[in-house]
Amino acid sequence: MSSWLAQYLSILALLLPVFVCVGIGAIWGFRKLAYPGEFISLLVTSITTPALVFNTLVTTQLNDALLLQILNAALLGLVVACLCGAVLLYVLRLPVLALLPSTMFPNAGNLGLPVALLAFGETGLTVAVTIFAIFSLAQHTAGVWLLGLANRSTTRQGKWPYGVALASILAVGLRLLDASVPAPVLSSAQLVGSLTVPLMLISLGYALATVSRTGLRTGSMVGVIRLAAGAVAGIVIINTLSLPPEVASVVVLQMLMPVAVVSYLYTDRYTNYGQISAGAILVSTLLFLFLSPLLISWSSSLP
Image (cartoon, rainbow, N blue to C red; front, side, top):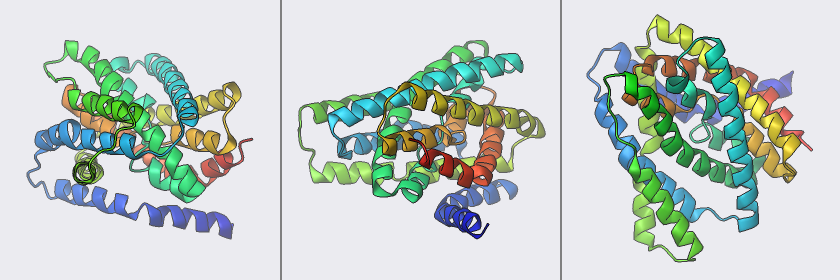
């Protein structure tokens, strides 16, 4: 019992910066202070996230063969999570296209990276950063495309975030050419990209403080779907692909992460279901934190 309690406390201590940023946004919302949500959303999706993705892809130090294995596992996991999420949303008579990104994309960034470091050390963090880059590219392209399809029946309009795609293409091209990036450029990308996580978390806290009862009630179902779809995806990955144990453990743990924070930003920006996505993040994150020792233990024991 003491070891489980120690693991809980270790995870909570590691995630203290996350709680602080969310708390700032929540206090802002509870005090009903003005919050430039549209500006923050546009800044994160169009400027800071492309910088973060570029810096991550350029600085990742993994050999090509291992990168390909991680890519295959991540894509398989997303496909399985997408299918599971779509079926469950349809059965529950929830808007499939508008909420599908919230059920298929895990929080592999601001939550997945520190948890991977805690559970698997520097090796786990390296693999997790690569997974985050893949998920991030998919979420900022395919995820936004899905929301665009849902957007046809709403009054909201949004533009596809070309910045992320361009940053990804540029970074991959530089890696293929084995070209070096000037240190000032990398430093600038790192600095701008570092704004992404705190801005997303503050926006999340503000949204959680103002979430409606309807959003929380429906969001709880979406949050449970995310965790269930991630578990199914993890099982499929370990039974389908022959991954090195250390890679398989990290990939599965990332698939078990709660709803991604950026899912709320895009859902709120492009559809009328932002409150539901915010509720899903709250419920799925609390469930993950409660179950985290069990989930980490399971993923660590994979053959």
